[in-house]
Amino acid sequence: MAPAAGGTAPDTEKRLAQRAAAFSDPAEFVRTIKPLVEQALRHLPVAGMAVLGQAALETGWGQHVITDAAGNLSHNLFGIKAQADESNAVSVSSREFEHGRWLERKDHFRTYEGWQDSVNDYVDTITRSPRYRQAVAAGADVDGYLQALQQAGYATDPHYAEKISAVVRSISNMGF
Image (cartoon, rainbow, N blue to C red; front, side, top):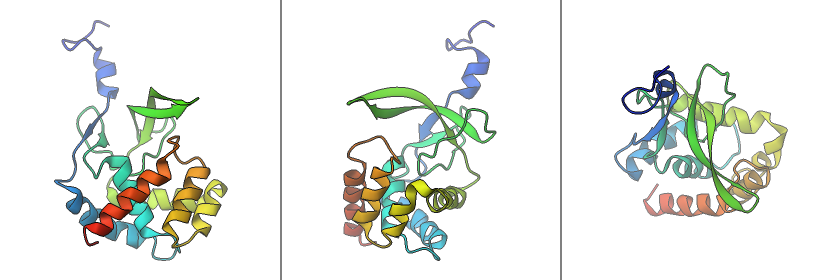
């Protein structure tokens, strides 16, 4: 098939994803997402501020939310990856830290109907996987939760917990 005017084949163009702003500023992000996190964690002793901070870091305060090629938001707040054959997956470039350096690669990420679905899937992921048992066991200890999450390999960034902690401090400084 010949490339389209933009230089990509139409089938490829349909699969390419972008990132888009979903919130006007960090305060709107927190006002919208915080109650959803609190709702999802209502029966768990997990640090809500840590989860909110993680969502803010993963999406750049909602300014870099994964979209599909048509510009539809994925509502993926936590960078949860998908299998290539999942019907609710979109491919997008991501950065991974491997062998001491950052690499750009294309990965598949889940899409959700809305923000609450993303939060619920995240909570389901951390509570059902034995991999995150220590994080959940940290309870309301924000730093303990984040360190355990990093040690469990949630992200490849060696400074992941430290970066989320800084975001959590920013949220607190906003008065939330």
